[in-house]
Length: 204
Image (cartoon, rainbow, N blue to C red; front, side):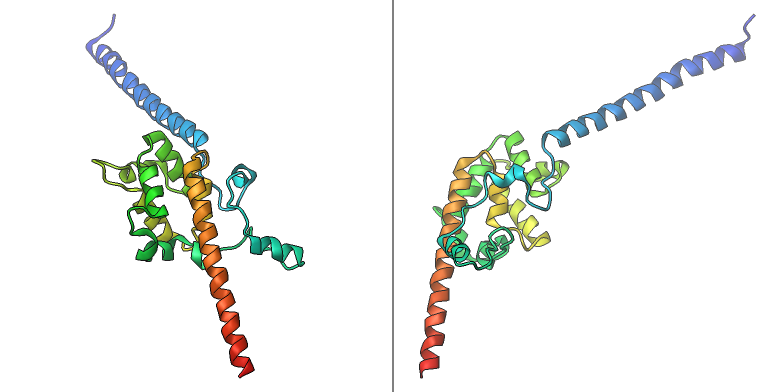
């Protein structure tokens, strides 16, 4: 015959074990969902892979010319100052215009649905748990904040990195390619002017 102590132990076991089981189940579901999301939107590796080669910025004419002349082509590893995000963000002449390419890109990404916005941020290296704080609220654009945060952590972040993160969004890729060509053309003009000045000084 069961006594009161045995009945209390059975009752306590009937309460504690289901609670422990429920906690374990919730934890398991949380990590399973986390695994699925990371599998769906993997963090972009630090080195370029074939998955991103399809949206690489096109090489300039100067790159083709150097390759034809047998000079080393550093297009793959080029981190030219003009295409880095840090000086680009800090230069008011390049992004603080309503119709500038940088503003158009930010406006476009800010207008994406959350899932698409999240994919772009994760490919740039923002953890998916932090993406929500950057997602636009009340028509306040936050993609520029994403780029500023990344630029402060990684000074070598370039326009090409953004193009790779925006794979599938041809509007952004086309704008970045055009901007990259413009910057490279400006750099080429400046280099030619520098050579002319040096040549003129040497003649004098």
